[in-house]
Length: 284
Image (cartoon, rainbow, N blue to C red; front, side, top):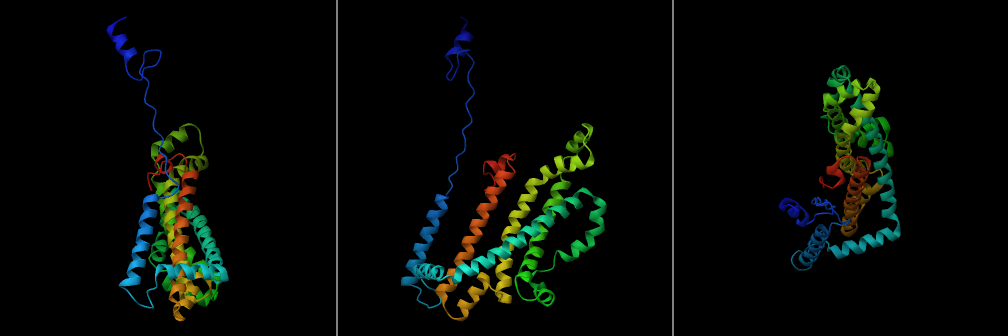
């Protein structure tokens, strides 16, 4: 046996053929719970409890334990649960409409330069308008209620999805499109099999951004119009100087935002399974 062969056989990790086996890639296991963030949050709550019990003494700054008691009490009474239901209903309706409209129109504008140039002036005129400034107009047109809330959510959430979809479709590698055409795919097939899958990451990013914007808008509209929901609940508690209940409502809004972020991230990993950064959690 030659020296070279002996070295190959004796090499660490070599198999029966004498060829060194490649190290298996280690799978990245990610905990379902962000332990570091959870520990930090608990520590922050304990610090606030200590400060509000010793240093800060104000009826407008209740202790976290008092907020927790108020939260449990309000959930048992059902008043807070009713507000959560109204808010989530408007939120999901508005975000769903914005997602469908933004993806469809953004893909159409991205695939057709003529369509984009036709609607460009209108888009650039409407996009900078603050959604809050349109609330009085929406109330006059649609009245006070869920319809106005949903309309404002759609208007505010529509633009990130539209532009992310547009730029995602426009950024598709021209070589990929030409290769698909060479293989005999029609323009429609290229659009659905090449351009849309390639733009999926951008589309998901737009929906992720809009999911947060939609929650901000639903609470804002409910506070200003007092049409029900969590926003109206927070205002009622503030007027009644029930600060513990008010902060409990604000806490619920934050919890909903966190759950929505986790849900969107999980759905993104399942749908866009071919993107390694998303699948392995590289963007989180």
